[in-house]
Length: 409
Image 1 (cartoon, helix red, strand yellow):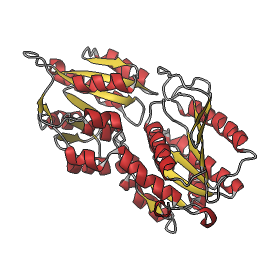
Image 2 (cartoon, rainbow, N blue to C red; image 1 turned 30 degrees about the vertical axis):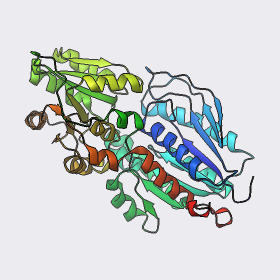
Image 3 (tube, rainbow, N blue to C red; image 1 turned 90 degrees about the horizontal axis):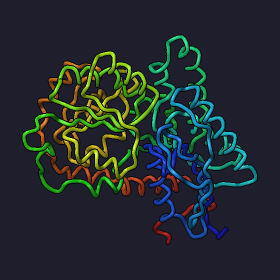
Image 4 (cartoon, rainbow, N blue to C red; image 1 turned 135 degrees about the vertical axis):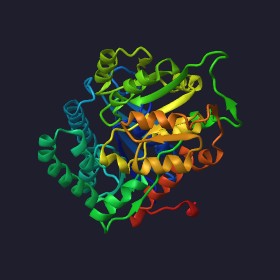
């Protein structure tokens, strides 16, 4: 390799063309790193073949070579969204990732992690390779686990995950968190660490679709029913089964919910809808970005919900960014930091207490049924600009012997 060149390992369980916030984030970061690295540098990406949802598949090669980038995708057995299935899938990913890096050296290991274990894997590899470690933390799993598992199981596994969190974060040379709401939790536990906060952002497809002027609701003349769209994961964390059927029944012909996605609580949602006799909720499988944009354009209101767990008071859902860019009225059942962010940053939004149907019904009347441009939000949270700053931060941990900055070019 050329003098001053860097060898970077990127660990991201999801990567394009898969559908997830981690996938879009990692893909944009790679593009930004390529623009900023010194000549002769190389990035190795270890990820998986698309597996975010059982009901969505996309073709992708196992190996892919781009200028300065090698992408290695690991094929996993088809799995559901339950914790046991996910654990088995991750163990397969980790085992084969360790096999791949054997005999290779790296200057920086970057791991983007929502459920902690990718961070632990990154810490383990960085320790063995004597490489610098940059962690991108997208969730507080050791804190969240008490809310998403039965109490007896959580009491047993939480100390284990807390120890793993400590191992990974103590080993890191720099840590980024995607929500400012995470900073207090981590700063209290790791006061000697260095933290950044580069949030998720808006991808180019949604920037291109952002309105530039006010537009009326897409409802057809004479049609009073509002189309309310939710797109994303259908899991315990979203708690859709606790609020969507109840809202649909209460609102009757006033709304039609369209839920696009899949996840561990989809069956529960379908069962609840059937048990309540609700007929104004449609559940559709995950779709690609082009079809998703069509569904968004046809919507009168975009819907977001997080379950009523204390740990979710700290999160900032990635879905907020693409929703807000499209200018649609935003109906959000969120609390804590996400609620404050939505009220302060997103015009024409209505926030209600998670799982509180009465609160949701009251807040619906706050929305203006038209699309409005959110120019300041779009300018502030474009994914490309955020990724450029994150890439610069990642490169700042490079070993002194190969340190390189953009101004030296």
